[in-house]
Figure 1 (cartoon, rainbow, N blue to C red):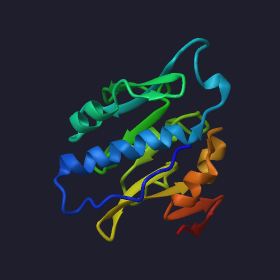
Figure 2 (cartoon, rainbow, N blue to C red):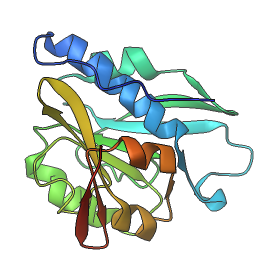
Figure 3 (cartoon, one colour):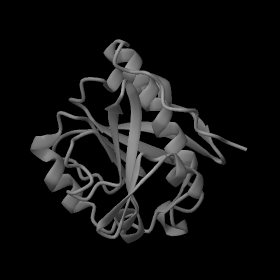
Length: 176
């Protein structure tokens, strides 16, 4: 049985440590989300986490997540250039500095089975699925279930219970 640990303090930590904790969150998200069966090529054992190649914390995320086993699949970190489509990703991480491309990327993924995880304040309202943020010196997350549903992603009830807030088709409910 898998449990997400309580959110970890991040403000007092260095940025590399903060992003190692965020990488752990991404790993657990991947364990607690179900993709539709047609989201993967038959026989493909890869779960692709995509990050744009200019992400400042790319090294921490990549070194923490590359090759991790999730069930029968192996997580691979794929680097995207600005012009590459993100449709071949299982998970797409957009850091807090992605404002210049966030709207276009999220729009291009509407209805696609891609778990989008980001940090910008407007991430959920622009069509992202999970937003990571700091709250009282801890890393927390919010979930937009309406977007997850339209992307054919099933979020575990265990993950929903741990969220700070859950948005259900236009309305938000507070978490714990």
